Image 1 (cartoon, helix red, strand yellow):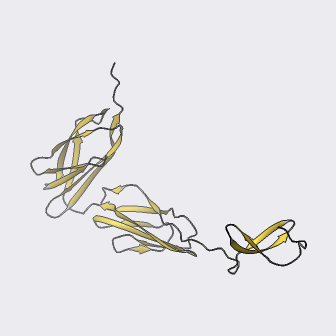
Image 2 (image 1 turned 60 degrees about the vertical axis):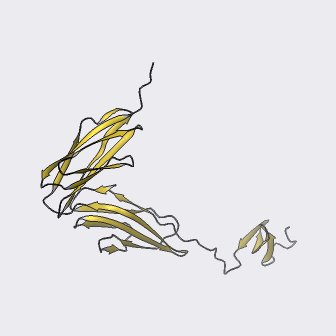
Image 3 (image 1 turned 30 degrees about the horizontal axis):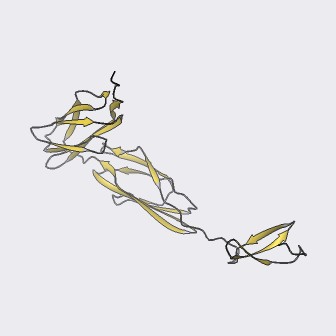
Length: 221
C-alpha cells in the first residue's frame, strides 16, 4: 500500500514472506535498502581454474598457463603449484623443472569470503633420466567394439614396469619382457592414450592425443 505522502521518509514494508525492509516511495515505486547499513550480504566466490595445455603430461620441462575461471567477486588469488612454488597473480604461468606428479591448489578470496579448489595429480612431468619409451598400435580407427593391440617400446634405457591409460577410464599394465597388451573400446569416441613407464631411477611418460578413433557400430542388414 502506498502512503498518501510520497515525500515522507523511510517506511517499513512487511512483504516477501514477512521480511522487513526499509525504503522510500519515489514516483509511485517503493525503493528498498537493506536494514543492515544499506549493503546486501555477499556470498563467497566459487573457485575454479583451467590449464593450457590440458591435460599436462609428457614433457620434462612443462610451462603451464593457469587461467582463473572463478565465479563471484574475487579480489585476490593464491596459487600453490605443488612443487614448492606459489603465486598471487590472477592468471599465472609456471614452469615445472623437476619430474613428478603435482596437485595444484588455488584460493579465491573476495568480500564474501574465500573458497579453495584443489585438482589432484593435475600435472604429470617426466622425471629427467635416460629412460625414453614409446608405443605403437596395430590399428587406430574402426567401428565399436574395437580391439587394439598396443606394444610398448624402449627407445633408450630399459623400463621395468609400465601402465597404459587407454583414455576411456581403464588402465592396463605391462612389464619387462612383455610390453604387449590388448584393449577393447566398446563405445564410439576419440581417445588419448598414455604410457607411464619406470626403471629403477626414472620415469618416462609418452602420451598420444586423440590416438584412437572408434566409430559407431555398423548396422546389420
